[in-house]
Length: 147
Image 1 (cartoon, rainbow, N blue to C red):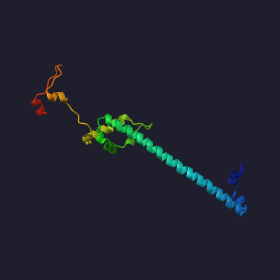
Image 2: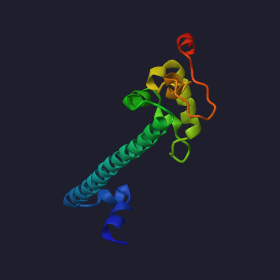
Image 3: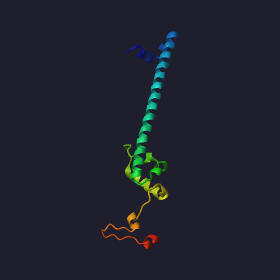
Image 4: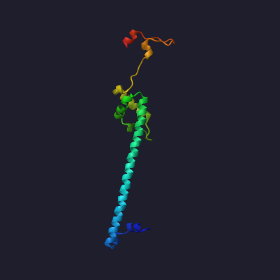
C-alpha cells in the first residue's frame, strides 16, 4: 500500500492529529487528482460527441442513399431527411431499418409528392407513335388528349 492509499483510508480523528502543512499538501494532491479526472472526463465527452456526430453522418448518408433508391429527387433528399426523423428509422444495431424507412417515405409521398420522381404510366414511345415491331399498339392523339 503506497502513501496515497494510506491517506485515503485515514479516519477523521487521525486527520485531526496531522500537522496543518501535511493536511494542506494532502488537499493539494486531492484537488490535483480530481482536476486530472475532470480533464479526462471532458476529453472523453468530446471524443464521444465527435464519434456520435460521425455515426449520425453515416446513418444519414445511408438514409439519403435509400431515399434516392426510392425515387426521391436529388434536390429533395435534404428536405425529406428534415421531414423524417432518421434516428427513429434505425434498428437495434444502429443500421437503417429499410422497412421503417420505406414506410416513412410512403407516408411522406402522400403528403409531399413533389419530393419524388413523377410516376409515368406510359413510355415515351407511346406518345411518339413509334412501334418496336413487337406488336405494340401506339397511342393515338385521341388517347393522349383524353388522358
